[in-house]
Image 1 (cartoon, rainbow, N blue to C red):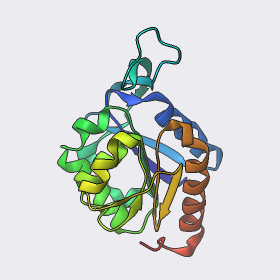
Image 2 (image 1 turned 90 degrees about the vertical axis):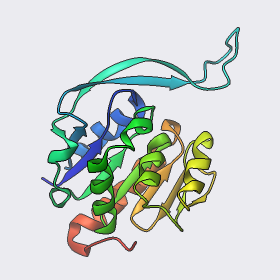
Image 3 (image 1 turned 180 degrees about the vertical axis):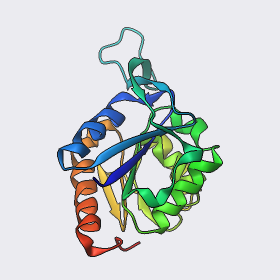
Image 4 (image 1 turned 90 degrees about the horizontal axis):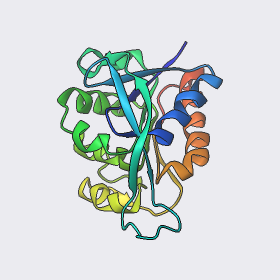
Amino acid sequence: MARVLMPLGDATEALDTFYPFFRLPEDGFDVVVAGPEARLYHTVLHEVPPNSAVPWDLTQERPGYHIQANVAFRDVDPDDYVGMFISGGRAPEYLRYDADLLRITREILQAGKPVASVCHGIEILTAAGCIEGRSVTTVAKCALDARQGGAIYVDQPVVVDGNLVTARTWHDNTPLMREFMKLLERFTRGDGSVEI
C-alpha cells in the first residue's frame, strides 16, 4: 500500500490532522504518523469562540484527542513515501527547528511527490526553504511566514502550485483533500512526479 507521511507533534490541530488521517485510507493510502519521537501526541482544537462575552483576537486553544506517532523523524526514509501531509496548529512553531524534518520535507518536494499543507504547516515549508517563487495560501496570520519564505501569498481556500497544495485552515479541508487526492492519484498511477 502506498504510504503518505504525516509529520506532527504536540499541539497539532485536531481537524487539520484527523480529517486527512481518515480520508487518505479511503482511497488506499497508508498514513504513517511521524514525530520528534515515536510516541503519543496531544492534539488541540483551535477556534475563535462564537458569541464570546470576552472576545478573542486570536484562536482559543483547547485540548483535543491523542494520536500515536509510528516513527521518529530521524528514522524516516523519504523514498518510502509517495507524498506528505503537513498539519497545522502550534506544532509547526517548534517542529520547524527539527533538521531531520526539514531534510525530509525538501527531499519529498524535490522528488516531485505531492505535498499538502494546511494552516501553520506553512512554517515548516518556509523553514525548509521549499516555497520560494511558489503560490501558496495559509491562515491569514501566517501570510508573513509565506512571504518570508519567498512565496506569493494568495487568500483563497486552496492553492495548487505544481506538486504543492496548500489551504488556509481546517474549514478548507474538503477542497484541500480533493486537490491533494488528485495529485496523489496522478503520482501513484505511474505518471511519475508531478511537475514542480
